[in-house]
Amino acid sequence: MPTHQSLGGASDEELLQRMVATHPERFDVPFWEFFDAHVRRRLSPRPVIVDLGCGPGLLLRDLGERHPDAVVYGYDVTPAMIAYGRGLTFKPASVTLAVHDVAGRPLPLAEGTVSLASMSSVLHVLDEPLPTLAEIRRVLAPGGIFLLNDWIRQPLAAYLAWRRDVMKEAGPDALRRAFRLFPVHNKYTVEDWRWLLGEAGFEVLAQTELRASHRIFVATPTR
Ligand SMILES: C[S@@+](CC[C@H](N)C(=O)[O-])C[C@H]1O[C@@H](n2cnc3c(N)ncnc32)[C@H](O)[C@@H]1O
Image 1 (cartoon, rainbow, N blue to C red):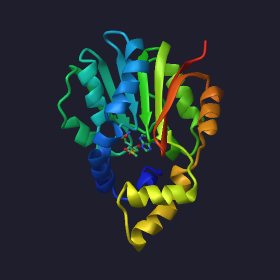
Image 2: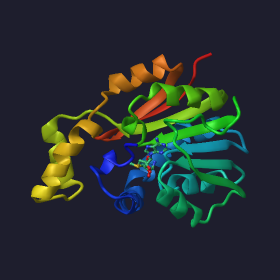
Image 3: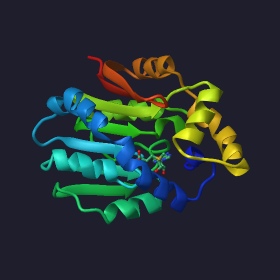
């Protein structure tokens, strides 16, 4: 199960700490402005919100602040992530966090019941994304939203410069890891993501690039 490719073979604890430490900069004011403009207004007052590969659950916690009457689900294959999330305080009363492999097993949710499914820096890790996208489409309600936020392909020089200047990585070990991660993080172009979404039966309603490394897509099932 390639759960740690995003950190180039890091331990569960290292990946958890990295996700927690970078959460505020990854989900910053421009992210929430984009969310408010393109997602929030499409959700009902009591939306069902699911985060797949939810990591430490911080995005779900923040979504719960905006939607206190939501019914919230978070799934992640790494038990340490789910354990961390279960220690958080959530505004909504109904929160379910569970260890679940979103690539290998169907989602434990009924068809057509989900208002918002989110996947952040996860889909690129899966060997084959189409079965998981089909599951997302199955559980989404008509008019439901799939919020996909993931890595996009960059030139090698730009990727290495980003790790050096933004991630503040230095030294031979960091460079080795950067080369190991380059094919993982730079797997899909923007066009590839759009094609995958279309192939899986989604229409893109909005998209943005808040960081050179990532693209965010707001998609909905095609009718
Ligand atoms: C880079 S982290 C992102 C975590 C979180 N979405 C965030 O943005 O903070 C990738 C997460 O995907 C999870 N993951 C990887 N493969 C998975 C799978 N097949 N099913 C469920 N979760 C998976 C990992 O355990 C990890 O928590």
